[in-house]
Each structure stands twice: as structure tokens, then as C-alpha cells.
Amino acid sequence: MTDPQPNSSAGEAVTGEAAVTPGSTPAPSGTTAPPSGPTSAPSGPSAAPSGSTPAPSGPSAAPSGPTLPSPAADIARGYAFTGPALDLGALLWEGECHPDAPVRIPLGMLNRHGLVAGATGTGKTKTLQLIAEQLSAQGVPVFLADVKGDISGVSAPGQPGEKVQRRAAEVGQNWTATGFPAEFYALGGLGPGIPVRATVTAFGPVLMSKVLGLNTTQEQSLGLIFHYADTKGLELYDLKDLRAVIAFLASDAGKPELKEIGGISSATAGVLMRTLTAFEAQGAAAFFGEPEFDTSELLRTASDGRGLVSVLELPAVQDKPQLFSTFLMWLLADLFQDLPEVGDLDRPKLVFFFDEAHLLFNGASKAFLDAITQTVRLIRSKGVGVFFVTQTPKDVPGDVLAQLGNRVQHALRAFTPDDAKALRATVSTFPNSAYDLGESLTSLGTGEAVVTVLSENGAPTPVAATRLRAPESLMGPVDAAVLDSAVKSSPLYGRYAEAVDRESAYEKLAAAEAASAARAEAAESAPKTAPKSGRSSAKGAAADAGIVEQVVHSGAFKSLARSMGTQLGREISRSLFGVRKR
Picture 1 (tube, one colour):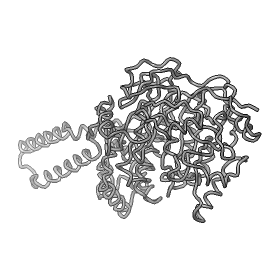
Picture 2: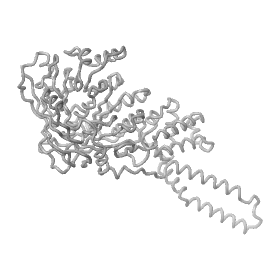
Picture 3: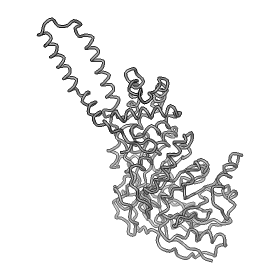
Picture 4: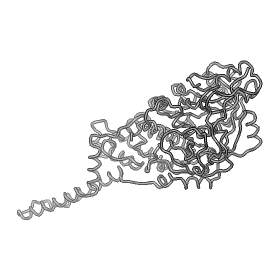
């Protein structure tokens, strides 16, 4: 019996010996056309391919290897796709690797979402790198969160060696060192990368409550504060704006403002102020402000047609897991509300890898989990695929897990009773299999995984133990100087590098308070007796008119009036997670 052999993947056919600036080499012949949308040449140590990059298409060639055992042949037939696909690796059966039985993911099924799971050290990061390379080669942009700081190597050609060559031979891979176009970002500019910021208004009350660790009552009060700011034109650009509004609404002057819709107690206001102060003391102020990051930057392609790999560098904020995981959710939610409905595409507009996904779900409220589920369910029709990356499937709630059509499960450990329980739970999430999954999942080596994906007609493929291909880019970080140079030379750096502090809620409330104090002082110093003559009365009236004219024409008054007029009857519209609609 023989089984289909796929065409070479786009990733393996790319050639290039050294990193060069993308755009300096013409687009490779045969490259699959990139998705429509804005195109920009990326910065960074990327290598433009010098050879051709054919996208797999059409029926696969017949294998040249020995006949497969019957169960393995049945599995191999499940991965014999006729359209463009990503090559993950080769089938493992009874300890033997079969390079003539490739395991693949149809390109059009990447927007049906997925899960990459496995214990620490089993190769999850390299799997992300492998998938990102092939997506980029086929014109699909990718977003990756680099928690440990070792994904920046995707921008540089890999280094050949004995291990790489041995793995390539085992899985039938024509390995060629290749770098891919990449852009590097950093939350708030902490660490190497183009700064990524969000305004407090755009971030919204639900996500802000998550990063602050608020309970339900406090979250509701924060939502009320956002509602007031939205309706009154008090822009919440940074954390000091939010603190100013909370302080005002808790003051004697501000309490009547929220009286009709419930108000906030002094105790709750105190908790919010203390939490914000502690949050700022941890350095979080840098993440909020302007210029706000435009998530459409993640949808770009390089001048040679390859998809841009956007890497969010997170090593500098590893100690703030709740913050960076929630920021990833903001990026996804912002994409969701901005992108139009497109239905099922032949290739995704973007594939978004959500690393350390368990941090997002830990301690999340039911409303928060429902919003995540709805986002994942609906964003597929906008052309975005989401892959959650974590240790075990049980880290992901069942309602979310049910939305994930593609699974790459690396090895699990079973050293403790909790490990054994997690193993049994993981096995139960797979369809019926010809393997003993309980045994297979504990005996997989590094760079091996159990795979099941959606076929071209949307049906699950048979479970396949797989030896994965070797990434063709550098499997490790690039030199710090090279990374810094890539960031500084990016056309986006000048747009986002410097923080901007425009007039917003803090300045407006401070100006209003100062004006109120000035009026009170003027009233106290005014004559207490009525003027004795009509002439004196006229002089007093003229003086009063002069004061009124000064106030009306003052910059603070004009700013407040303009803002209130702009917002009158038009509250800021918000979508899932309370994120502001643009």
C-alpha cells in the first residue's frame, strides 16, 4: 500500500544564506499571493528568499518509501490534502518515523483556531516557530508573544548542524537556512521593541478590572466610572486620568454627578485608588497612554509577498503575567471589532498565537470567560485564526476548547497524582485513536507531538503521532545589537517611540478645580456692602462682565465646553470586554 506524498512546503523551498533587508530581493517566483491589505516592508534582520517558494497545491505525489502498516496507512490518508497546507512533520508508528507519510494542516483551516500544548521543554516554542515560518512563506501575517526571549531568531537564517540534518533526514525535509520578515514590539517600550501602548479608554473597564484583580463589586463601580467619563468627554488616556476621575467622583463636588445611577462608595473609591497606586508603582504606567498602537499593523506583508511575523518581546515583563496576558486579549479584541466580516477564506488574514494562555483564564469571572468564548467563536469569520499555547488542555475552559479545531499536543509528565489526572483529562479530549494515547503522550520525545487537525472539508483528521520538522530560521535569540538595530530602523519606530501626553481628564478636572477655587476666592474678597451710587453700581456690573468674559474666553472653559459639546448625546460605544469601538 502506498500513501500520498505532499509537495514541498513553502517553508522548505525558500533559500537564502544570509539575512538581508526585506525588499532588496524581488518577490520569489511562485510565491502564493499575499492577502489583501496594507503592505509595508518590515525592518529587522530578515532574509529575502532568493529561490522560488511554491505553495503546495494539487494532488500529492505517490510515496517512494516502503508500504505502511494498515493502521498507519489509514492515518496517512487522512492527511493527503490536495490544496495548500503547512507541513508539520512525519508520522510515527510503533517507534518508527515514516517520512513518506507527512502530517499537515490545510492552510484554509488555520482560522478554525487551535491549541499547542505540552510540558515545559517538550518543544512548544519551536512548533510555533515552525508554523510561523510556513505561514509567512505563504503570505499570511503572524503574531507571536515571545515570553522567554528566544523567538527573535525567526528573523535570521538557521544554523546547520548535525541535529538539524538528522531531523531533516528523518522526516523527509529539504532543510534550507532561511530568515523571515519580522517586526519586534515591547509593551510600553519596556525591553527591545517598538512600544505598544493602549489608552485607558480603549482598554475598557472589564480588561482593566482583570489586570487590577478587582472583585465583582469593584468591577461594576469601575464600569460606572468609565460610563461617566465616556458621557462627559473626559478622555482617559493614562492612569493619572483615571485616578483624577475617581477622586473627583468620590469628592463632595463629584458625588451628585453619579447620584442618579448609583454612585460609588468612599470605601470602593479608596480601594480603587490604592490599587491603581500600587499598579503604577510596579511600572504599569508605561503601558497606558498615547500614541495608541493600531492593531492593523499586525496585518501587513513584506514587499516580497511574505507575511510579516510580529513578535511581542515580553522578557522584561515576565513578572507581570496578568498584565501581558490581558494586553494580548486587548490586541485580539481590538482586531475583532475593527475587522469586517469576510466568511471562510482560502487563507487567514492573520494567525494569532496566544502564549501562556492559562494566565488569561486564571481567576477570570464568568462574564470574562463568556466574552473570550464569543470572541474566539466570531473572529473566525473575520479571517483571524487563534492558537492558544499552554501546558495542558485543561488550562483552557471547555467552552473555549470546543472552538479549537487543530491540536498539537506535545509530551506530558505523569510524576504526581495531579499529573496523572491531567493526563487522563487530556486523553479524553481527543477523538478515538489507533494509539494508546495515555502511553504515547508520556513517551514522546522533544520535538514530537500527537496531532489532529481539520481536513479540507472540516472533518477531524485521525490522531497522528508526529516527529516535527526543524525550523529553518535561527532556533534562539538574535544578538541584542542586531535586534536593537532592527527596531530602530523600523518605519514604525518614529510613530510609536515617544509617548505623548495630550490634554485629557486630569488636566480638565484640574483646570475646573482651579477655576472653582478662583471664583470662591473672588467672592470672598468682593465688597460686602451694596454700592451707594448708580455710577458705582455700573462700575461693579462692568467689572463683573469683564470677569465673566475672561472666564468664557479662557482656554480651560473653551476646552471643557468643546469636549462636552462633542460628547453631548454620544457616549463612547464599547464592544466585547468593554473595549472602545473606534
